[in-house]
Length: 212
Image 1 (cartoon, one colour):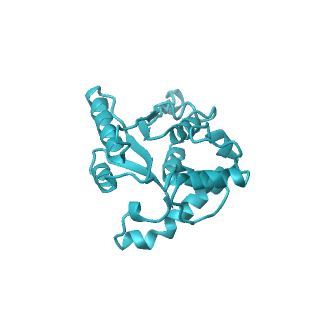
Image 2 (tube, helix red, strand yellow):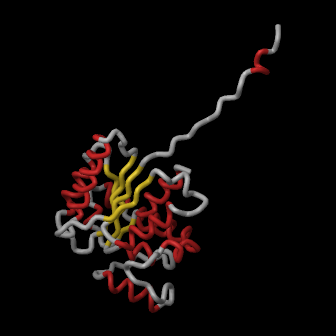
Image 3 (cartoon, one colour):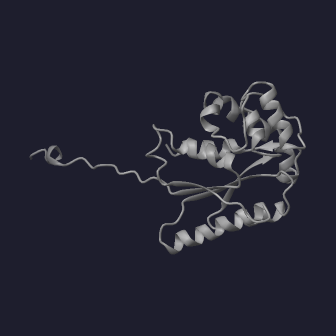
C-alpha cells in the first residue's frame, strides 16, 4: 500500500488575534497602552486591540464603565464583539467607586479594571522604587519623579511608554508586590478602592503579553 501520508498537504495553522478594548480616563494611561500595543515586534499580534480615551462629564469611573458597556453593545450589534474589555482609572478623589466596580464585575463580558491609588503616576513611580507609601495627591508623586531625576521633564500627558520600557520588569514586579501586600485584607472583605495605596496595572500588562 502506498504511503498516502506523503501526499497529504500539511494544514496551515491560522491564529486569530483576540479583539479587545482598553478604555482609559486620562492621556497618560492612553499613551502608555498605545505605546505598548504598537511596539514594532508586537504590532501585528495586537492589531485587533483598541486603546481609547473617554472623559465622563463628572470624571466618574462609573461613567467610564458605562461607556465601556455601551461600546460592548455596539460591537455586538455590529457582529464584531470584543473578546476582552479593560477600563483603566484611578481613585484620585472620584465618587461612585463602589458602583463602578460592581457594574464592571456583572457586565457581559466582565469588564476588568486596572486600578491605581491615588493615580496612574504611582505605577510610574514603581518603575523606580519599591514603595508602599500612601500619597494623598498625585502632584506629590509627580514631584518625587522629577526630584529624584527619574523623569525630569515628566508631564501627565507625556508619551510615557518608551521612557518606562527599560524599567518595565521592575515596574511590573513592584506593582504585583503592592497588590499582593493587601491580599489578606481583600480576602477578608476589604474593598480595593478603600485601600491606602494600590496598583494592579501589571495584571493588564501580563494579560496582554499572554496573548503573544
